[in-house]
Every structure is written in C-alpha cells, then in structure tokens.
Length: 217
Image 1 (cartoon, rainbow, N blue to C red):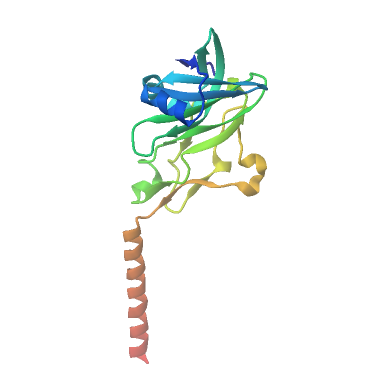
Image 2: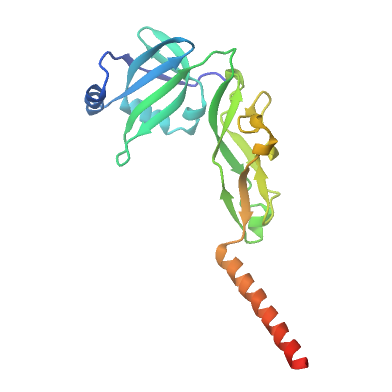
C-alpha cells in the first residue's frame, strides 16, 4: 500500500515536560520518530494538521510520509496520547518502516451485513468483542481494514479469528502464537430481557407440569 498521508513537521531541540507544555500551548504536538537502528528524531506538528488526519480512520492503518528538515521518512503511527478531558492530542509516536521487513500494526475491523444476518432478523443483537486486529505483513501488503461478513450468523453463533479470511501476505499476530490462542471477534445473542422472559416462561411451564403430575397422583 502506498502512502496516502503526508504531514509536515519541524525538528525540536527542547525536550522535557516544560518544553512539551510550551509546545502544546502554541498549538503544536510534540512527537518522535524511531526505528531502523537510526537515531530518534524529535519533532513537532501543527495540532490542526494531526487532528484533521485523525478524522480519517485510514490514518491509523496507512503508511505515512513525514517531511522535515528537507527529507521525507515513511512511518506508521505506533501510539497517540490524548488529553483525558479536552479534544487535544498530547503526543505522537511514529515508527520507521522498511519495505523488506514485516511490520506489526492494528487495523480496523469492518462488520458487513449485520442488519441482514440470520440472527438479527430473528431478534438477536450483535456484540463486537474486537474492533481492530493486530496483523503482521510487509508494508506493501498493509490493508486499510479487514472485512467480516456477518450474514450467516444465527443467534448463539460467533465469529472467531480462525474464521476471518485475511488478504494474501497478512497474518494475525495472535494466531501466530498457535490455534490455542483463537478468540471470538463478534457474536449474535438475544436481548437480555427476552432471554429472561424465555427463562421465566420455561420455569412456568415446568411448574405447571409438576402441578398436573401432583393432581394425577
């Protein structure tokens, strides 16, 4: 996958909490680029530029171009710290990539045909147990997202990691540890209230049968 995001940055020399605080006050985001056995690069970005990029889900699963100091580096985003109360990005970490080496990155899961699934048509609800998946692949094979078709799921059914069809060249990091690490990704279940009603109805029928049996005796 080719880079589709380009961000302009500036080198920074001041480090530490005080320097980062001053940068944020000036509407800048402190950041770092590391990896490939090179010296880390301490950078700053315009806050509005990163916020605009973050509005696109693909920003978090694409190869990015970072331009600074007359050069450009290809990276993926590894971590982003946000303010707990404000709409503000506090810090960003980027990792350099090499076309010949596999990378590990989280990509979004897109669930298809939920409303048309067998279980939902029967009154069930869908639960997403995972919303993204950590994958391993070469940069050229990096998918923007992974699709999961929910159409065939009935009430009580689940989709597991081993059920997902991954693109060629892409592997699940969890499953690379062995099939014993398989996990459920999504499931279809009845609403809790209806389940309780069904249990109460079953209990009532059982009590009625016991009563009839006593009368016959």
